[in-house]
Image (cartoon, rainbow, N blue to C red; front, side, top):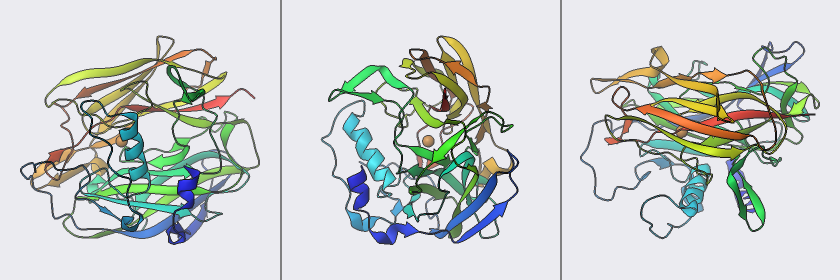
Length: 387
Ligand SMILES: [Cu+2]
């Protein structure tokens, strides 16, 4: 991956267009830094009406990308049924480099953040990524902007990984771990702040940044019939130096043990659950939070530790930021997912189970380009090792 990242042209480097400092929310003496990047122009949506399905319509074909010149990775040999590891890797790469939006009407962008964008030799207590308008208000479904996802990936740090895929899988003699790329902070339509401590700021942990080398990738869908100009904003609260356990994120999916965090599509007008058991904890420490991520159709993500329910993260739909009327049809999207914030001690060898529940009768799948889109069922956890 690092050699591929090295091929990215310098023109993809970006510095914040504005930086402000605010009063800290979690801990006295901390610094809170808000930076915005952009503007980015989301093309007008000329495509809100349902169309008959096109033969062989490829996912992402109608989207726009700023990365047209790099040349995408070729298509994998066609397989039937479940996506292969190659398909998953290919999709991840194309998504990451913003060459192929995941949504048919998606606008996708990828930038390398200039050094100094986040903070250096610092411990991050919380971070948030969001999409805003020029005047600082949040761009959300209520204003016609569906934030598919935005992520900041730390390129200077390799995650040790605190949980394995199940059962421990060996590739070339090395154990495959279930933590994926080192996503540091992120944002999506299900609005959240990524905490690396407890909500009262008291748990002694945080995400330590030594060097300061990040890339950002975001995808948005404009549901308005006119262009909209938006900015991507990062909001960090941090303290200088290395303080407490070096917390890391880990993400596990309900659809299996092979590290595929991708989307899936439940049937129309159906309810049910999908789950995977047997993920194994690799280190002693605490899981200090768990929060599900789903798309429309999902109702919640559950997490069990050694068979005991630890967290139910519920999908909350609608509200002013999560409701829009498109072509006379009112649509309520997931506005937020509830979060579990009680630190739970875990030991090497403990087993985790992740389970998603869905109800596409109550919450139909989101439509774009006249086609029903997928849902997801993943759990983001933050782990703090024993010091
Ligand atoms: Cu998703």
